[in-house]
Length: 432
Image (cartoon, one colour):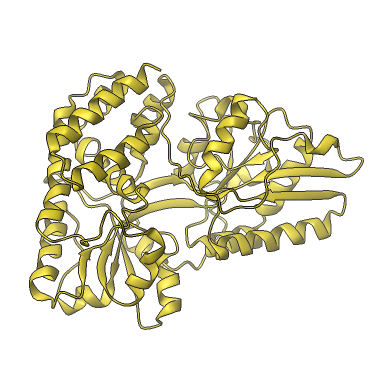
């Protein structure tokens, strides 16, 4: 993990470079702005209302979490946890609150515990759960001074999901390089009867396009020693003509009938049914796609492989870091109660429950979670977890740029245009 640590140390030491990972749909509860707790305050002597915001969206995730909240409130009748799930509008709401320095008492840093929210969070280093934190997470949520910025309910290890039966039918071994991945897509296209899409992307929700790009930028420009542009990306000197390679590869997927024809209108919500009905071989989607597809069709098995290597001699890698988290707002008036709830969440039974509900590994080494993808994480346990590219190397706002430029590329643009737009927006946003 030394290589990753070195990169993150450089990234966190640089001027904060923040990326956006948002949407614009609102499917959450009614919200209560900030941590004013309706005028209530507490230091443990009376009733306390702890306002909480989370990015959880799926029914399974929220259901498990709400059960834990109910158990906590039952054991602590003087504390109420007011949970809010704003869905796609989460980031926009938190930005407004952050600008007013009025963040919720507990909030999800969704991958930005240090770079975006670091100045607004209470140090959690003195909490009991910290001694069980997975060392792989220390470099992500803890700084060189020892400040712990957030409690991670789980840790993300993103790669590519695949339909096990389809690969077996065509005699395809899970690919480890981009070239092998493309060859696998071509085999499915050539040997199939046209009912199976080699690579399915719900680009109507264009964050799915950004997800693919963000994952592939890491093996393209970071992990290979001979193609490591991390310093140039951090200091602003990166030559964005290098990006044309990735844009060309993405465009070739469409031109060679390796993507779903409706890539620009297909919706993310369709993914589970498409995978369950064996209509797609690969997706750049992890999370609940596996268990949800198997629940819909028990004969469907969804596998997981790390993000393929791009350069010869390089290894594939997991792309990840913190997924769902809770930080305590530095100016919260109910810090003790907020920390008390976090300690409750970190209890082994509750931590296991959340890891299994989200189908991700726990961030605590004392927790064994039986998750859907456990066998694949074990199979590739020797691979490093690289941080999400945009969280370290790109300025705030580039997530939307990746989504939009890729959509424009697939709608008739050129790799050169995509690279030029990425370059101009990268410099514009760095200068803000």
